[in-house]
Length: 190
Image (tube, rainbow, N blue to C red; front, side, top):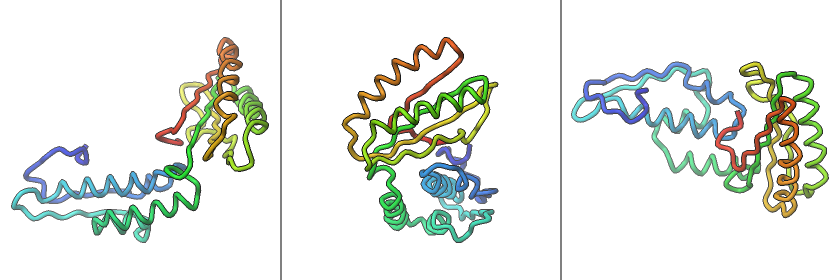
């Protein structure tokens, strides 16, 4: 709550507990979110003419996101993060697409996602990278089991047509309890 830009003029000490929790999430934006949160929350301490202090508890004090947030070094964080994303093939250097399947029965959801993965493999070029199928980071939610596929690509001329075809095919499955979600440029992989 305190990191949301609210102005509390008498706050002179801010504590962050488990600051590195988000770094363990399976998402390429985890470092960026951690850096952003630490930078924002540290700006809440010591407003106006009052001195402020920030205490950060972390198990990864040497992680670049935490080190650079400590020094408010936006430029170095940007260069480091973009280098990692370029090397790993993530946005803004690649496009991403996430396909998620859920069903009340684990076996049915797994069977469906593997079927869709086979369909996608035949239409993707060798330059595209398909991550998965894997269980969702949250494998079961509201009595449904989740599986996902993430595709990283630069130019896939057949992808749009293939996804349109798969979307039409999977609409029939919704009557049998399946939910299929397509997310172009997802904001989160969790």
